Image (cartoon, rainbow, N blue to C red):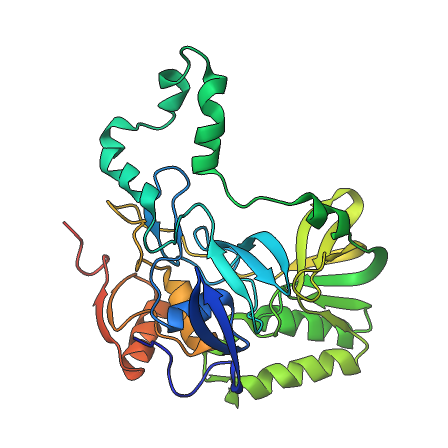
Length: 346
């Protein structure tokens, strides 16, 4: 089953890419992440829970994703604990789900979940204290561990470091960040705009138009205006901390498998335009594959032309959900929109 739409998105359909997931051949396109390519192929289970090996699917579409963590091999080099939603697809990649054997879809340790009633949180701290915890510790750690780092990987994984400064730092390249960076640059300030995606625009790609202008054109106009006014733009760059005296730590990612460049930036003023992430609803079995954040569903549809499913129950009470329900329906999905504010759940 394919969930990929024939048109749309930011992917380049003229550049197909092949890769494997848990040994199974898969295909995506230039601009896909591992996660979007797997979702488009109809792959539902991408990982297992940390201890009980319950099946896990995609929840988010970027750094908010907690489940799709993989070991990725490319050109003979292995890289552990790669987030599938932020790892852009490259031809020849081999991805394997961590904490699952022989595969995420069929994990032998998944049977542990049958005994969940007797496995209360932290039960092993009391159960395995006798006669000696250290007799059981290696086995438990292996069952609950993530990817393994090889010494050879550590020896070659070194990061360049540099120092920089600016008058105004704008963190986030969505509509608000682009507008702020444009205004700052045109006022004569030394402006730096950073965005952790490969492309600018953020959630703007979910809209057909901004200010009566096609979205792609609006983004391109803001991009050109910032640069023509002397502003700088860094994509693939994440701000990971703000410290004393407006010192900001930036990690600029290069090609896959290389260590990010560390930039120590001093900014006179900082504008946060990072957007927001969805908070999951609390209900029984809300961790099962197929349950996804509304914002993530919108991102997969807009950026990767991929439906989150064919039969969709949309539980949300925001105006964005109304728009998404309409867009999903137009894309061919059957959507049941449940608004708890209008029809309270019992």
